[in-house]
Image (tube, rainbow, N blue to C red):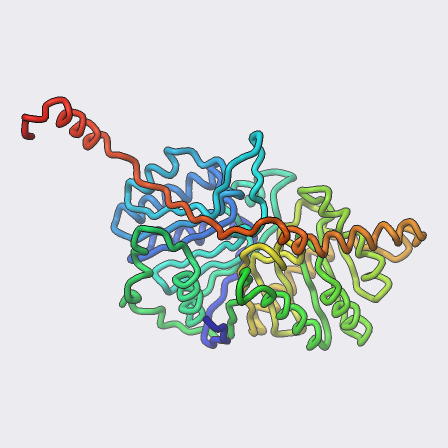
Length: 414
């Protein structure tokens, strides 16, 4: 499958779960023919329960529903959670489940990190928001700042085609995506946005998302703002950021100042000297954990998706981003990011950087190259094809009782 730019799309930026979840649940409530959903995290909390009810209601009124969740990111879904869905006809697939070693999950590499939803093949959601309560602002100080985008228009066809080609391929039939597309009419209202769907896999599209970031930096003329939760890219991307800054582009990078995992800040801080001394403006978001994977360039380019700029996302995980050429959407996202910079971020000044000693330099070089080459090191481990495990529907109680009666009374016919 090849990627191509599509014109005539409408875009809606969704900030945090407070905007994302209601839009998704409304779309699920209006679904008529099909729903496809995949996510890294699905927790059995209040948000997960709300999603469960929306999917169950859709399935019970005849909508074909398919779900794929990453088994590492969603390890503790209870039997009742999946049983009630599969009993209603939902196809529930776990991506690459693995055994635990002394209770610890060990299969942490090459995960399904995408967050994609399609409804009736005419509406789609792509971004970085998982289905958990920690994406709601009222969750508290650890609530994650994150983004998704809702799209309608021709680009949805590309997203649907991608899910058909790359999603689960288990023993049961594929239900709706193995058939012809629905004949439901498309939304007649066309927008002006050009959109491109890009993804990262471990086959033919290993560096597609990174290449688009590099191209964006090389072509930037005025301003670039990147907000990325887990920032530790390779040398090529760091070099292009510095190159853009040196030719007069105002390059702003927003990273976590109050991270959900301390190692995230330690890694990013190793890059501060290189970036700041090269003219890149580095800011730490300090209000709460930043989970964003977004960027804007000049007055028209923007991206929203699931891909971090770190070794896992750029070299191992399955990711998906949408890229847009649209002035209105770019302006909306730029204004939002500038608001974060003005009110909720602290700039990393050159005078605050640690002194550059030989020990500091040696430590930075060793840690940087280890982390950057970590995916290749992980690749030395025995490779395996990710296993897709479909959750079977529960045995119906009345059938189980009837089977027992027939066994106890083989000569008696019901």
